[in-house]
Length: 576
Image 1 (tube, rainbow, N blue to C red):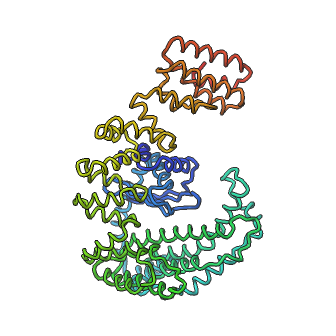
Image 2 (cartoon, helix red, strand yellow; image 1 turned 90 degrees about the vertical axis):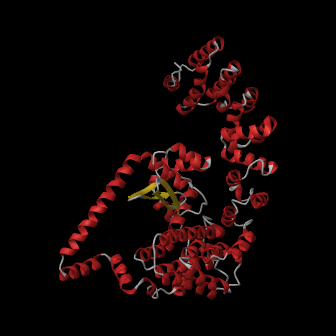
Image 3 (cartoon, one colour; image 1 turned 180 degrees about the vertical axis):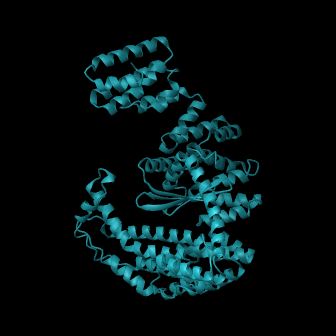
């Protein structure tokens, strides 16, 4: 994909998310990268180890991550940067693997046809003994996926997991000093203790999630799902009141937060693996059966929240039969809030073609549920009157996510006041000059000026704010802000655009800040920073001010003649 570049990534994610992803990549947080056909899978170490995938479909990359962040996350950015860095190798490896797989399929078919029945039986027996995962798959093939999983006792398993979590003890916390990875470099003591405790606690649960993953990969989806529900129930009912933590590494609230975070990751990973597979209709019905049996069994404890299983249940809606079956189960759980499963119910109505109930439900919850709102907005995309009503009520909800949608589907003529609000917010979120010019053209210079002023002082729009001041040639404003902000350090973002408009003022700000900075600081990194500032003086075109700048640089070098590292950095910056 030729247009998948670093600039492309920067434009599709918030600036802060990109920075964090870039930091992860530079810190070599990608621990494992596998390429298989059109999919790239990586393990990325953030606050914990997450699985990130990038799949090439119709010449576009689709990313997913098991972390709880809702949107394009820093882990996906890190993988994206790796893909850009290794673009040629990635494409070559994917192509080679496709070729090899195709050749391997042909070879296998030939070999199977050549083998006698006795040879096949002998080879199968030996392979099943050597590779247990093949034994699981073979069992699935013989029994059928819908008949597996009966051997897993959720109650027994959940009790076992909960007991292990409640026995987690941090009395002897010194063990974490010994196990701290040296590759992490220097860390504060509390970080060493917390990272060690988190890793050890996750290992308590990991053995069960690994088993769930093994069962799922062998297509024993019911057994796998039961393991997931056992972990779910254990985490939801665990009692940490007697938790021993003399060093206050977590405290009780911190441990509950950790378990909730782990649970989100576990559910995401199961859902992702489950969605990659296809089963007979009965398997999906059995998944529904198992979940609702557990919901009903635990109704007094009220530990289940169906929103945690929303996407999984929607995946079970394969046809009108499974939709009806799920609907009947939903009708029997009146003790749970409908809002928790409204997305599932919408999917049921959609599959059954029940437009009346679909619309009633969507209009009931679209102000509180972002996914429901999206479905309703798309439904009325061609109805201007209804869309204006929805925009007035919900366009600015959900972190204003739907502003671009309403911008695309409405015009100034439809509702001038509403459209101005929408376009103004779209300019703010997108931070593009093209949209700003459209806003100015449609609503005038005064509205544009007021919009620019509204951005002042906001860190997340500062770069855009400066670009608009440059666009409007508001150089006096840039100079004024540069003077205000350049107290200890010169604000280069404000100074660069005006270096040849107010050369004298720029010279005074940079020279004063540099002089003070070099008086207070010693060391190569400080000299390198000062050199970056002073390089701007070399761009001054006014001859008189340029001569002043050259004289100032010479005085500076003479004054600090006993700092060879400073001279070296100035030489590298071509100041000498």
